Length: 471
Image 1 (tube, one colour):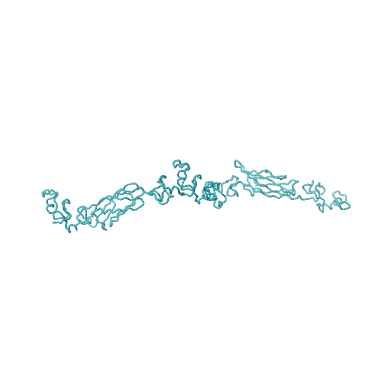
Image 2: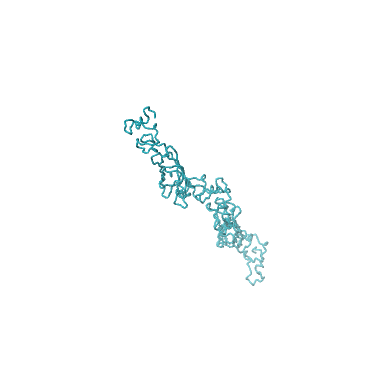
């Protein structure tokens, strides 16, 4: 009668064929009242097929479970870092229509769940904690076109494989702060899982491969004393440099880039004779230094220990004294500041001593000012003599010293009294009536010639040349 594919007698008599045991009897005039076991679907009517007994929005003719709205469990594999999808309605009674509402009602998943009710698609993005686990999403689908709404629930079991490592830095993508940057990783890094590419790369540009830094000079990552930081150009063992350095930083502040120190003047780190230490402010090649780029702390260092800080020392690496020149007239004390062109500062801790030279005059040094005083000897006028001196900074042990030469020009001596005997040989240089064997009559002054030293009325010159005027 009702076209539900079950004969009237099977409905009235029930499954046990006994109409008096009513618990299994159904209504032959109600298309939604029948026992499934008795139904022959091929015998159902068009009108029955158009009914929607369970009101899930899916007519009986296409509903796998016409009497009870049903949702079936689903499974999904969702790799980390991607959005994975499954059509949860494809095995449910509910049709993918706009009147559906699908919501998450439970489960263990902590990732991002998005439903599209009109298509039945559930999208899932795993959270960082889920790779290597299985999680669930419990959902409820409801037909809201009827009142009350008709709903059913099911569970999606999601398998999240272990995360990959796109950048090969040994930190899985789910814990890596920047999964595509091999030079950024987190505490999830496992050195054994790093790629060959990562191991042979040089993140900090110090010329040491990432793996060599992480394992140290002994190649054992567990002995951490010799391990260095692959992300710090200032952390390296120079003995492990195998690559051309690229770091443009300056770890020691000496005005030479790390790469220029590690690679050397020839830009080849493997020819070590010209390489310097980027962590030693006193180890650098002068030709590579840009003084304007030196740091305040480097300027305060005293690499050569001469007592003059690098910042004011013309030669910061080697204590240096430069030669000097002096003109020293006989009969006077002449001075020159020998430290004015030396690296050493004029301080009390300096000691300056004469260590050689040809000068026979009197030499006196004032270390706290750098002044050398010189008084020529009587034999030196008209000659050039030298004083070799050594200046030492005694504030350090061992003392730091340097030597230089003062070249002294001693002009011919004057003749203050005009008696023709130069002051340097004249027994009394200011007494015109006392002279020695150094007198040269031709060099006497007009005043001396017209004078009369012995008071006999004859001029000095007339006496010296005689009546014939010929000395």
